[in-house]
View 1: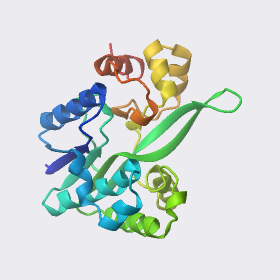
View 2: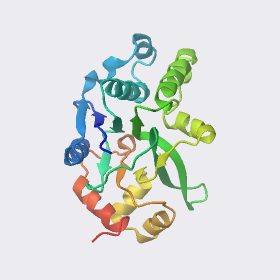
View 3: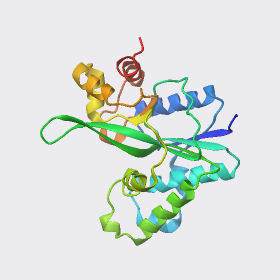
Length: 247
């Protein structure tokens, strides 16, 4: 069954070149699979309620957590069968990847590689909203929109934690609702990125053995990267070889 699919992304005009490279990769992937590609610049936030923007002035990531859901809802209401959201810093690893069918909603699943307090490697698994799929039948989308608006309306603006209505909310709800997750749409922690770039086989083998699937796309977590110039194609090729067994 062919689904009319829309892929949505957003990024400010001022951004690192490597983020633009990621955006171009997602756009090319979308076109290869006959998906409609929609890109929003700073007008992305215009969809938000005025009170929400005022209360969260200057809190871009939290503004974006709701804005992306509202744009997804608008695309579904405009006739899309399926909407895929990818953060601007999403790197497509496998251009041939076709996301498998979900009943109504799916979120990416990060396998976050880090070191514990004693310095030992560990992986923490949890859902993330850098990659999301919603179908017309989703009961989750409107519930998330309602929940986020309700939380922000009641919270003290001086005590809004980062990721409060993003990954932290999804993690809390996942423990109750058991969302459909896509481990192939993961996230690259700074430690994993360093290991990939340095071909650190010990760290890479630890990660690969504990990963459910080879990555098809990875969120590079731009907020945690200090560099303004990354070789995106080089990283993609290294991931394909070191984590996907290609080459």
